Image 1: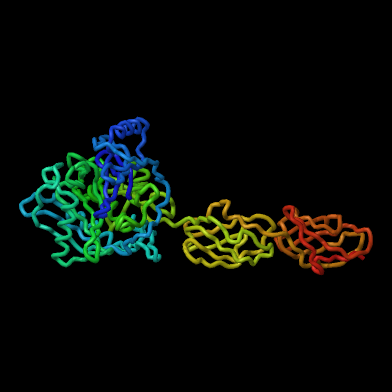
Image 2: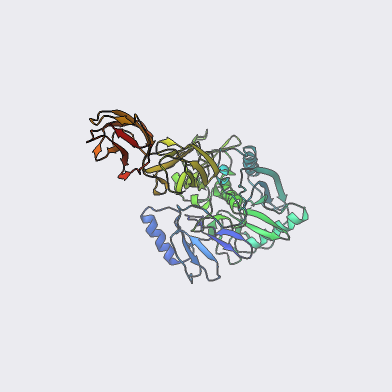
Length: 537
């Protein structure tokens, strides 16, 4: 299911139709929702927190209270839970669009009301701009490119514009009554299917059709007319996307009714200086990115049911749009530049950064666990680092020391050879383009007890005072490592690294060969003759 919060005309709560693969929005349906809306408004709340309920017809819906909740049939069999709007999207096994070739589908019969001047040109220019910038990281399509399918193929920013389709077929008899011209989703599906078949157009997971009707032509999900487009008498959504199964293929489509100037869909900020921007803001970009990452409504969505566009349709400027990049000549802010044209429309959800982004941001590596979690202080342990955001990693460190070597196996796995280290726990960190992984409990690698492999010179007088160099592993830099010559401790200890120290021998009672012990972090080296042997003479 696709779920999101909303205000005013977009009650942006989503449901799925098992028959047609429909993805659409549904407003709050009971008086309780109206009360909740007033409570939220009084508290200044405007987030996309969602509630999920089941309707009498079996559909599950997710909604946030709006200013004007519609009086729908009371809900029954409710299953309510708070939306985890900050949770990452999860992959559910369905397909993505590994590339997208887009058609604009203008359904405008001869003699019917047409589009305002510049509208169709503005929509086409936007999709042409997406194609021109394809493969770059300068707009929200690059954010969607991080999501992959089960085969590891990405929803790459690989966009194309196939051109405008002008459908002059007459509208069917009204299927709903929420507007003077009112089309149901079933009627839109029927027209698309017929037209695509008649003209031999592609029906697959690399093409999408955007149905764009003129002003005063509205749509409803069903003949009952409870959930309709924003310009109708039952406003519930700005746009929606879905799929139609045809023969051996699938038609990916979005319904984008005319939303210019409609409160709740159009912000009236048009840095592109085109009236078409009202529809781009209202839902065209939103549905486009959701189609790329979840064309059959079975791929990427969060635990609350929200797709990548829904999670950023918050109606809070800082999260929905992010920080403006600048101001256009008409004074409007802009946060996107597409094909050299300024735009102002919503961000998309990024699992990499676990928030909404205007463009693909470099991932900050995150470590969740190590395997194994411990090894010899001398180094050389082969450690698998598991987490996320490892693609392009430039360094791996165990504490302050770089790994001997490392290999990035995937975005979620690195194999590293541990360097020599000080006995005790060391935080493993991974550094990439987006920064260095934060310290967490799962990144702790524990080095084993110290070892002594050689002492030079290995002899000295019983009076002590011999300056010796001790080589081994696990030593603590500085003067905290304790070296025991029998029951007496060395003096003037100084360790320049975890493998080299200098110390002064203590006095000993009689000539004797003894094993020297090193103690670090309450762990003491084992006997290691003849490397740890010192002979008093």
